[in-house]
Each structure stands twice: as C-alpha cells, then as structure tokens.
Amino acid sequence: MPDITAVTHAQNIRYDKQAEALYIIDQTLLPGEEREIRLTTLDEMVEAIRALRVRGAPAIGICAGYCMYLLARDAWTEDRQAFLRKLTEDGEALNASRPTAVNLSWAIGEMMAVARARLQEPREVLLDALYQKAVAIHEDDIAKCKAISEYGLSLLKEGDGVLTHCNAGPLATSRYGTAQGPFLLAAERGMHIRVFADETRPLLQGARLTSYELQRAGVDVTLICDNMASIVMRNGWVQACFVGCDRIAANGDTANKIGTSGVAILAKHYGIPVYVLGPTSTIDMNCPDGDHIPIELRDPEEIKTLWYEKPMALPEVKCYNPSFDVTDHDLIAGIVTEKGICRAPYTESLAALFDDET
Image 1 (cartoon, rainbow, N blue to C red):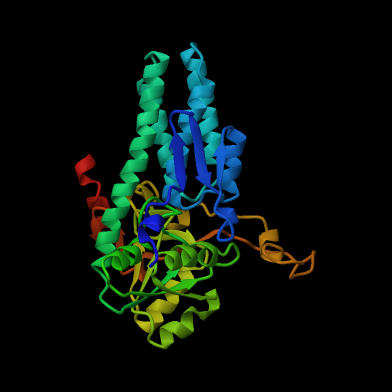
Image 2: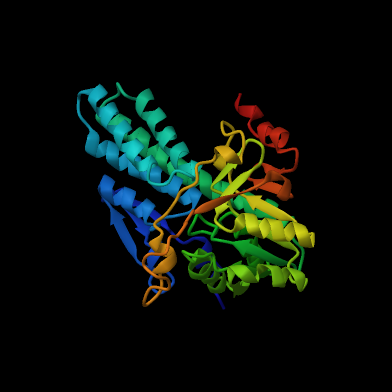
C-alpha cells in the first residue's frame, strides 16, 4: 500500500535550529535519487534557486525566508545601518535569481520588514524575530495548501479525469501542494481521480516530479508528452485542468510553467474548465495584467542538450527558452486560493480577497 503521508509530509525544506542549518531536497536529482543538500552561503542559495534545486513558487518563498534569516546571522554588526544595507543587498541578489515567481520577492519583503522593525533590538532578539517569521511563512503555507486542496477537491467528482501541467505538489510547496493537492487529498479519502501529467519540456518537472509524487502516493497517474494533451481531451478522458501559478496579475492573467497557456487554449476548444490553484501570496495586485509579468529566459542549451546523451540539435541552431508563459484570464474558469474560489471578473474577486487587509 503506498504511503500517502510520506509524500504529503515530505520535508522538501528543513531548518535544523540546533545546528543552525538549512537543508533542501535537491530536486534536480529526482526521481533517481532523493538527497538533501545544505545551503550556507549567498552564492549557494542563489545557485540552488536558479538551478531549480529548490523550485515551485511557494517553496522558493519558504526557502527565501530561512535564507534571509541565515544571511542576517552572517551580516550582523553593531552598526545597525551597515547591517541593514548588507541584508538589503543580499536580499536583492537572492530576489534576482528568479524574477517571475512573486513569492520570492514577497517572502524577502516580509523578512526585511521584520529586520527594519526590530533594527534597534539586541542581536538575539532581532535574529529570533527573523527566525520566527521564517517559520511562520512555512507554517502559513502548510495551512494554505490544505485549504486550497479542500477547495480544489470540491470541483471534482468520483472518476473524473484531470490534466495537470508542471509540478505543484509537496515538492513545490509544502504538504499537499496546490494544483496536486486535491489529487492527494482524494486518494487519502478513497476517492478515485485519474490524473494525466504533462511531461513539461524542457525541464521535465511533470515527468520527474509530478508523476513521481503521485505514483508514490497511489494516485492513478498517466504520464503524457506535452503534445499529447489534445488527444486525451478529444478522447473525453479529461473533465478539468488543474495548474499551479507563479504570479497572478490583478486582472487574473496568470504566469505558470511554459506550455500552460497552450493547455488552456486546447481546453477552451474542448469545453474543459481550467482552474489555477495557488495561495494569495502569488497574487500581485500591483501587476495590472500579464503584459507586466516579467518572464524568465533560461539557458538555450537546456533545449538542445539537457537529458540527452548527445546534443539533439546543431550547436549553431538558435533556441528560445522562456521558463513561463501567461494564460489570459478569459481562459480560466476559476482561481482557487486558501480563501475560496474566485470567478470572473477577477479584477473584483481577487481584490475582494484583500479587503480585510486594508
């Protein structure tokens, strides 16, 4: 019997307070090897995020919280303004490692706000406040993922087929995940959901991570190539599409892993609803629409050489390798957050999520 708890409670990010050490599961080694690595320096932190050793918008935010705490320990000096300048510089360097995922800048901003508020406190008081904030960011995401999973599951019924793109499970978040959370919750409760997981070229997060997590948890998962999404929809095997998100603009336009917009366009043709699942921390109300979401461009060599024994294209061939694309809000049937399911018009329903914060 698969151990669902081992999947849903996997510690993709772990902070050992006694040793003052931050560990992450190196996702680049999965599914062949599950190994923790320790992050100690700014360079290691930036490299881990940029190289996708830790990935998934919520997970990046959680990791950034602990990183900022460690960086504050290293940056400490009794010259408080010098300390703040150094921590700010480190935060900016960390933030530049992946520009699209808003959780990264959000978590860094949360940590910097604590540092400024406690700047005149004794060292141990300030550092403890930063550590407690990092823990709070982590625990908050666990709670949000469970709530998102519950709302997402309410959109499905026994025997439904769902297509998902990229990876939005426990490895990319915490505990159940966002777009994968409803599948894991369904399995825990004995509800049968059939999942079709796109491989997600060129980094294969769907193949290496999503199918890995779901198979280990006993979920009925079928891996397909990205260009097979249309035929499984046409066959009537898909009743909904669930995807995660790295940034949601104020009008509901959503950035997610490259290929998501194509899935949404196909789904519209076949009359299949597309749901975006993510915490409110991925909603950027200062970003008016998808045209204002920065899109990360990655090394073109990922297309030609990654995962291959030998290059699959001539060295001189040009490649375009965006990491994300933007799905227009009018292709999205609903945005599932920890506060509930938002529907169009998103300019109103997303704004309403933050009414209690004004």
